[in-house]
Each structure stands twice: as structure tokens, then as C-alpha cells.
Image 1 (tube, rainbow, N blue to C red):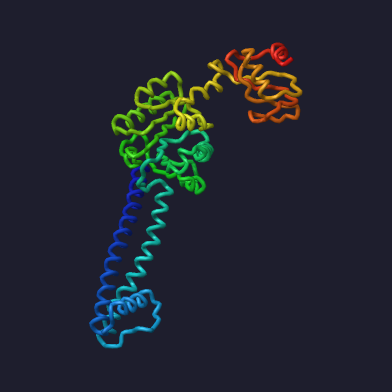
Image 2 (cartoon, rainbow, N blue to C red):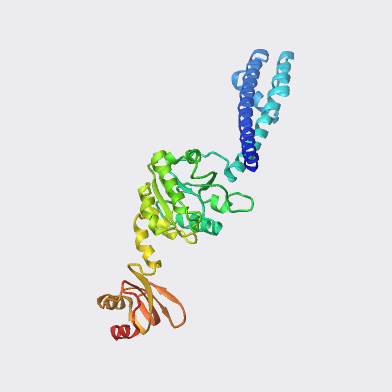
Length: 362
């Protein structure tokens, strides 16, 4: 019942906006007709030239009325009364009133996801995570603009709802070129409304990692996009389970990343640099090919270059950064490593013993 009421309210909003648009167009046509009619009347009854007739008509319609030119004959004045006073001024005011209302209602439809946008070469984001969607959307919109290739691209969010009290996209995110369309990736009609055929990239988010059927839903959406709707966009999809990655890829995903509802950085990397997500994901996976580990040490002073070479030559790993005695963390970029107590190393062998590290650093 609620769905039917919502559908009727949505339809009524569209009807009101459509009616306003028709009303504006109709009033403009009437206004132009009265304008031309009065200009002709001024030439016939008042003997004014074309420019004077246009000037008199404009100043009267806009109620400026300079008084430098005016109608003096009976028929000229009668034409002004019927064409302008009873006609054009009313329609002129109506056009601007309707335009204001049209813009207001259009803005309301846009903010609530009910406006049908006309987009191309955009990024389409399908769905939103169920956990902390506000924070995710904030990070996604902010970090996406850090990539030059995506800076300036419009982003369409296709979701059933937004995680805000008023159900509208915040101005801060909207100002970053993000737009909202109410709908679902499981509905082909909604995907068509989102101009899936014109999108350059599509991101299919995993809504809830705890759902047993989450990856099956994602795979179905990907298949609908790439096969049924024949989209040529680059499709990056999230997977809740590593075992379903191949299945989602088989259904048409260009890249599949591990779902991370808290942090969109890996997904954005896959979007900008396809394949890089596999390397980055290893850092966060225990038992992966490479692990970011830490080892205790006592380095008073050594160049970053020398320390890096020693760690690599002794098969310890790649030096990524260090923590010094004052508690500050330093990453690659400092020339000298001073008062280091902990080293952060990317290692394929796991933990590094303190004794072995001490031998290397002597």
C-alpha cells in the first residue's frame, strides 16, 4: 500500500512539473503573439516606425513606461489596453511566476532522486553500503576527485534511498558533481533512466556483506548491465566472498574487488588503475603474498636509501616507514632515518626477528 502511495505521489510531482512546463510554453507563445500584434498596431494606428513600436511595447510590458513614446490615437490606445494591459502584462508576470515554481519543483525532484537526468560519459554508482553509508559517500566523493582522470566527471548514484533525514543529497556532495536517481540496479528500467548506455564506468557496490546471497545479487546486476543492456562501460564490482570473484567476473565485471564498506580507496584504485587492487588487498589480508609487518629496532641515524638497500639485500623486505621515539610516524620522503624504534616493512616472509634485524643494521 505504501509503495502504491509513493508511486502516485511521484507521478503527481512529475505531472505538476510537466504541466508547469506546458503552461510556460503556452504563455510565452501568447505573450509573443500579443507583442507582435501591438507592434503592428502601433505602426498602423500611430504611424511609428518599427523600432519605436518595439520600444513602446517593451517599456509598457515591463511596466517601465519612460513616456518618451506613447499611443495618442483612440485605436492606438485601445490596442494598448487590450493587447498589453489586459493581456501581455498578465502573461508576462505568469511566465516569470511559473518559471520560479518550475525551478523550485525541479530542484526538489533532483534532490530527492525523482528527476530523470540527461547524462553521458558519466560514472554510475549502483547501490550504497548498509553500514555507515554517509561516511562512505563522503569519502568516495572526496577521494574520487583526487584522480585527474575522474576530476570533472559527473557521478550518478542509483539507490533506493539516501541515508539522510531529508532523503536528499547534501549540497557538499552535490557540488562535487554527484547526482541522485531513486531506483535499483535490479530494475532494467531504472538502469536505462540512469543512462547506462552512455556511462563510461559503472561501480556495483555490495550493499550488505552479511547477506548470503549478496554476491549473487551483484552478479545478476552485472549481467543485466553487460549482457541484457549491452553496456560498454568499464564495470567494477564488489564481492563479499573471494570464492565468488570468478563468478562475478564471468558475468561481465571488468574488475572485482573485496567489499570494504568502510573505505572506498581500494575500489577507486581498481577504477583508476585496473588490477592494482590485487596488490593493495594483499596488505590487508593475513596470509597473503605480501604482508605489511613491523619490527622493533634502534636506529639512531641512517639514510633512507641505505636502510632500504640493507633490508632488500638481506631478504627482509621493502622499507615503508618508521616510528621514532617521540611517537611520530614517518613515511617515504625523508632523507634521513633518525631515532627509529619501529620499522614498517612489506615482507613476503612474515614477521622479522629483532635479532636478525639487529645484525643487518650493524
